[in-house]
Length: 100
Image (cartoon, rainbow, N blue to C red; front, side):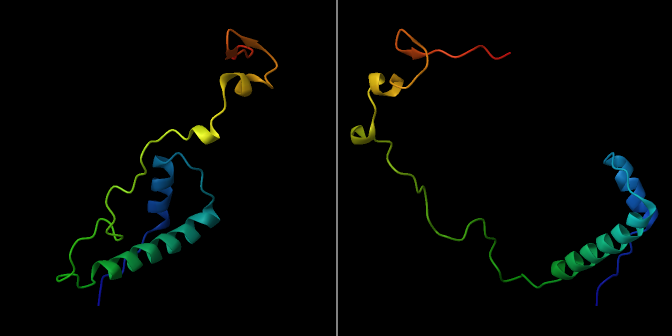
């Protein structure tokens, strides 16, 4: 059927070094098996016959599903209402401590 990939513990160690990861010796064997299984699974998927399947970039068929940008004055606070619970204000603005 397809090729069978085998990722060696040495290759896993090399990938770990490239990613700046410390991998224990016990985990090298486990990751070697796990990565080999993933690559073998992907190789099976790549063998699927998709000759008559059109490329798909989205599946809903919807185009530009945005609402109009309308101000809802029923739900709006006045500046006074917005500032009513503020601890400190100045000239109609919230005042907060500096954060550096």
